[in-house]
Length: 208
Length: 208
DNA sequence: ACCTCCGTTAACCGTAGCGGTCAATTCTAT
DNA sequence: ATAGAATTGACCGCTACGGTTAACGGAGGT
Picture 1 (cartoon, each protein chain N blue to C red):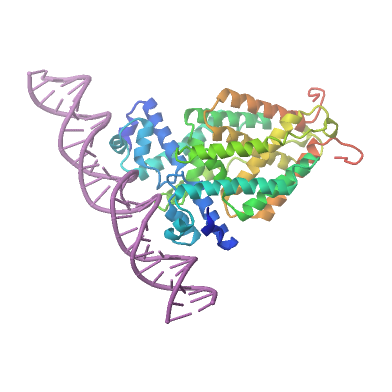
Picture 2: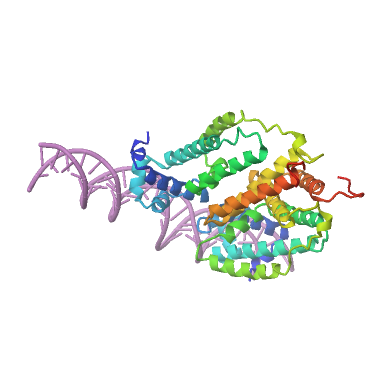
């Protein structure tokens, strides 16, 4: 289908993908010019049209790539198999950052595409999303052992709270651009350590 | 300056402002058409140009309005005078939601404008921002009494964590549109209660 | 030396949308 | 009826868009 694009060296492919993620994540579908994407990728507009027959094809290809890579990388991180909640979040976040390192604008693109309203692409997006969600639904919420946490804590709320804070944390970094991944990773470790120190029940092995 | 606009009934003014916030928050400055704003406000493009001489004037007016209302509403909420951290956050969040109720897209507009790169407006934005930040800087970080919180907790980290979670919480609601403010408020109350139950030191009055 | 293939591009095309203007129309109050 | 303000449709010059095409240039085969 995209044989011409796939025969490119992988490095060049990534540059084009990133250019697409970048432009489409900052504009609506309709207001994302192919010329801007080509410029960002350092190639001519005509060549971009040589790789992808039209704008819609590129956009949907980017969406599929985004979904595929996310699923792959999350599976690969092993976060779903972790029994320990904090390890699970840690691996999950590491996966997200590994993705962001390679495709800095993919996260933005994903949310933008999900809420895209343009009739030329929205139905395709939603259809594909439904497919991926049905896969995702197999992963049920962690079964947490109340004995491990401080007495009386609302574990459901704790989980949601940690999720929101992770999102807020990630968001703050993504928003300001020029990412320092080592710093991000260290910061998230601190966050995890804080949660452990506060939420985990104190025992002989874990004296707070 | 904008005498023609100000002589409008307040209700109509708000409609126009919201239309502006909406369009400018979803596109770059350059790609936000005046025609689209006029449509969203239910008036003709020519009339919009009657109220504001050109696009730049409207944009900067929106920015000033945004900054002014935010400062006003935060002051008015009384969150800065609160001695208790949780009360302070509660009032602050209530103020944010009061603003969002009236101008649903103002929060989006603010972050977008802050990161706007277009040379036609970016310098004005940054200049005005510096002004407002210098006012804001007078409000120093809460002096927290370690005696009130569980022993050994990292108060600095706790504060940051609560901030991130609030942002993540707000973001989740804003993102999906069609806001239910009562539900949002209840949800945030739950979050506050959770924090109190976990972070506050247990005493006779507060048996966890 | 010539030819062929193919990645790559500048230049182009028809159209649509932009910021901004203005004459004309409608509304309102006397 | 009429002055004056509010409001608009139609317009202008220009830019930018998606997509096409003819041509360029280098690598490899003969």
